[in-house]
Amino acid sequence: MTLYESLIQGIEERVAVLHNGPHMVWINETGVCGHLLFDLWRMPGSSATILHFGLPYHRRVQMNLLGHDGDESFASLEQAIYLAAHAYEEAFKVVSQEGVASRPVIGVGITGAITTGRDRRGDDRAHVVIKDRHGIHQVSFTLPKMEGSVLDDPSATRRHREEQGILVDLVALNMILWATGVDQIQVPGALQSSQTETQMEGWVLKPYPVSIGHTDLFNKVFWPNDSTTTLSDLDPKEVVLFPGSFNPLSFAHVEMARMIEGMTGKRVIFQISQQHPDKAVAPLPEEELRRRLVAFAWRHPVLFLPASGLYVEKARLLPGVQVLVGADAARSILNPRYYGGDEGRRRMLEELADLGSSFIVMGRVDEVSGRFIMRDDLDMPPRYAHLFEGVSARWDISSTTIRAQQAR
Image (cartoon, rainbow, N blue to C red):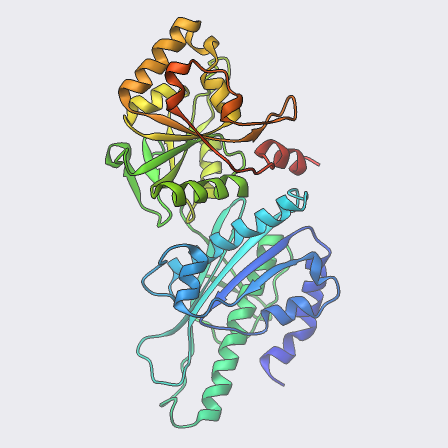
């Protein structure tokens, strides 16, 4: 009896529990493949759990999937994090579109460099990463290599490669079980990692958290590769600022950013302010800001500002920058009450013109009237109309709608 055959009953029992729970998973796996999809699918009720399983094996396929080159090594931990972050974002998009954003989702990224048809230097290794709304966790491990050359016995090489794939996918299944609170499968057999814990019948996993936002938050851009730069490093002519609360970040926000990047050739940077323009609203606690950072981690750049609730304050920080806003936000920008009256508004618009900053205005459904409003629906002084450029596009889902779904 093989290792996998000895575990089938336990796998089926755990997967049945998983299918009866609320979690849904999106999986991106590369460099290795075992029985993970089959293990999840063969038990009745799999559609309650599986959103997508992808095998982006070719380097170019991964680059197209992620929208960038990814990590230099396509079998690295960093690449697994990229794949998990992509998977989480896509999973959240689907449940939001289906009106079931209350369903918790898990993005899984798996990379591996295992036995192949040539003798490789270095360890046979794999990385399994999960991302959910709480953060990112990972397990990295090495696998026993074949003795001698892989060219000596092609049949033995094939069997060893298959066994390694099965073992990697058992780790991935245990990561999913761990994230959903289901008891892990105790797996006997060889696995070299500091992230396992030996129990009576075998090992279970101890995933490590991937650090997110491990530095001061404010006046810094957090980039998808886990690097940070300061506000002063930005060239206002090369970026578009996209302010918002992003609670949560939705697929509509992401699609807007992609559209504007395609139109302008500039990089869109999401931006969250701690202080709302309405000073009566309490500043957001730093803990809450760090929670929102999780959604952007390893996917999109985001800038946190301690104040700068008013858009003219953002323009002072980055003179000449374009700012992406919805038509409802543009209407608020033009509301005289934020500036002490019409004369205050005029001075604000004059300052924006002097700074060389302007707005890209996306159409938006007004949450009060239910009417779709665009740039041309706004009441603005003709002298400053050139500061507001309208864009024709429509995504009706909002963070407010998603929060309402999550509260059900």
